[in-house]
Image 1 (cartoon, one colour):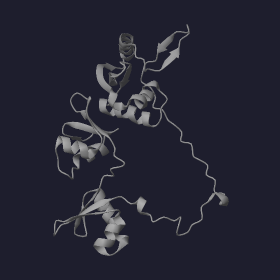
Image 2 (cartoon, rainbow, N blue to C red; image 1 turned 90 degrees about the vertical axis):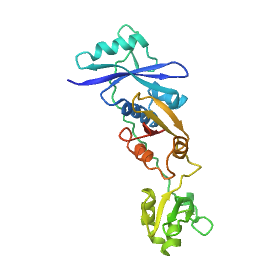
Image 3 (cartoon, rainbow, N blue to C red; image 1 turned 180 degrees about the vertical axis):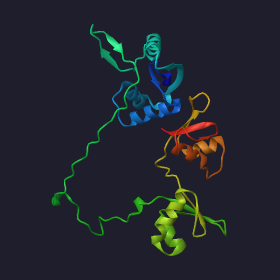
Image 4 (cartoon, helix red, strand yellow; image 1 turned 45 degrees about the horizontal axis):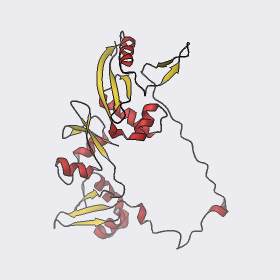
Length: 253
């Protein structure tokens, strides 16, 4: 017998609602909706996510069900809330009827752009057009373990040249920076690109509601407390719904 949860998603600005059901944990179901919205799903709820912002929505559990009572419970809750964001269909009597969930995950095909490689459209390669490649690098910081001095670099290649004299050692330094590890007598970390901050939000482990939202990881660490090189929030972000930090599951968005 399959057991699951019937839940409500509410637009806090407009009061419009969505009723669904899932056998997943609530936070994982929430992430599914966010990801489908990012993939430009055409469903009304996901369009509203893009229009109002995910932070203006909340999710809460309404009821539990098993295979024998799913239809009756769904009808009960949809009749009560009359959710505006649920997909609708035309009945035999031409009346609009709310579709019961569980909906299938939408598979969105990716259209490949056909590129024109006609020679007349290509720019000539010379010292003026080739660029210097610096825009491709990730800014990183290295802390000398003997002196304690930190130094910032525009790329791992620059760091490798400065520390080892060999620019081809950049791969080892970059791998160490991604995991905040030691290489060549330095502890490395990737610096946050201030022009490309990723907003993050925290879902309360107990209530499963979004309670905090920040413009970046650094802002969350500053507000909630933690070391400059916090890795617990990053681990939570990389494993949605599996690990927590400060009593929250963390997600990008």
